[in-house]
Image 1 (cartoon, rainbow, N blue to C red):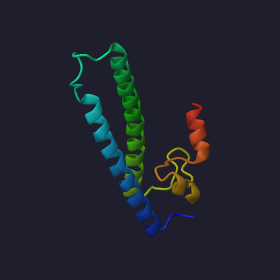
Image 2: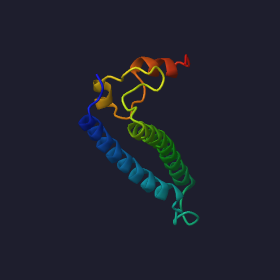
Image 3: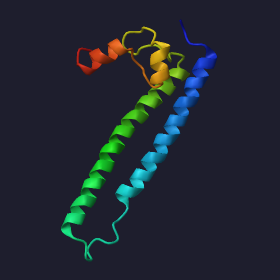
Image 4: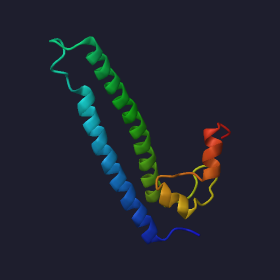
Length: 121
């Protein structure tokens, strides 16, 4: 059963909202990571510097994860433009609506995703 135009429009809206939220988070994280620590060099204890570095590393890891999610959202939006949204990139099968409702940026069926993650595809 192919998706109706209204359903695709709803998914597009959700994807664009998600994209906006992630973009804002990435911008805020970038500010935090690149912001110079004004108190460094004065009386800050080395353990505090270690904690600051740890927090900065965690922020960078979160940023990497969000960039990956952003790429997936962009791919799903691209598929909407190409009129292939809801079709698995690997198998060409329809992606069940329940999967798209849960993960609107899904570009593969669960079966294809599992094979891809296991390196079988």
